[in-house]
Every structure is written in structure tokens, then in C-alpha cells.
Image (tube, rainbow, N blue to C red; front, side, top):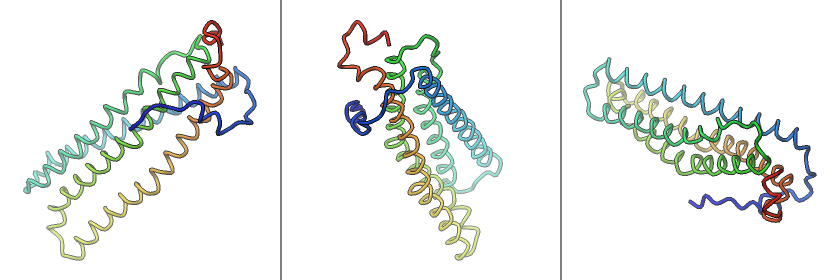
Length: 206
């Protein structure tokens, strides 16, 4: 995946955007970073608790089929791997903003956008693929204890939730996230006068 960001393309998408007030924009940038931090914390808590719960089930109920154990292992590894990549945002999100220039803010949000784009495409695809595989392997033993109608219902509900999450929740969340970050980048770029057109001695003083 090409992670390079075309700043000029982002700027051209909103050619009539007025240059915003610097202090107000910095305040909005701080709020957006705080919102992104909160989402990161929430995701960490939810996936860690889910991993612990899944591990507890595998440890306590002693599944008989090896497919169940493999399914649990795949899901736990999947969640841990996703968090390891997701948490690479921490240095950017927790960087102190005191005294930061417009250019520094802009570079921070460019890094956030690159990481989010990678998470929302490559990592999320891998996450859903492995999660689906883990769930279906896990439910083999669960469904085996039920009659045919109950088995079909188990797999149908699981499949429906995965498809709903992939085709509705995921794209909707990504669109909102990208719109917020892209808008912030465009506004910061406006104040920074599109970066590349500024002399080197004044580019970093804004």
C-alpha cells in the first residue's frame, strides 16, 4: 500500500476554505488528538478484556476438539497483533503540544493519517479474516452439540454479524475518521501556506 499523502490533493479538495484562526485551530487539533487517544484506550481495553475472556473459556471449559483450541489461539493472537500495530500511534498521540508550531501539528496529523490508513486497510482486513477463521473453528465444537437447525442458526448469526461489521460499521467509521483528519490537515496546511511554497527560514516559525 502506498502510504504517501498527497498534500496538494487534499488542499485542492477544499479550494475555497478560508484560513482559520490559529488558536482556534490548535484547540480543535488538540480535541481531535484527544478523541483519537480515547478511541485507542477504549480499543485496548475492549480487546484485552476480550482476549482474557476467550483465554479463560479455553482454560476453564477444556475443549475436546483441537479445532476449538486453534480457534481460540488464532483469535487471541489476532487481537494482540492488531493492538501492537495500533499502539504505534501512542508516541504521536501523547506527544506534548506545548510550543508546537503549525508545521509540527501538520506533521503529527500526517503521521496519524498514514497509520490510520494502514490500520483501516491492511491490518483491519487481516484482523477480520483471522477473527472469522477463529470464530468458525471455535464454533465447530459448540455447533456439534446442537441439532442441525441450531448449527445453521449459530453460523448464520456469526456470519451476519461479521458481514454487518465489515460492510456497514467499518466503512462508516473509516469515512468519519478520514474526514476529520483530512479536514484538519487541510486547515493546518492553509495556515502553513502549503509548506512547500514557504521559504525555509519561515516555514518552521508558524
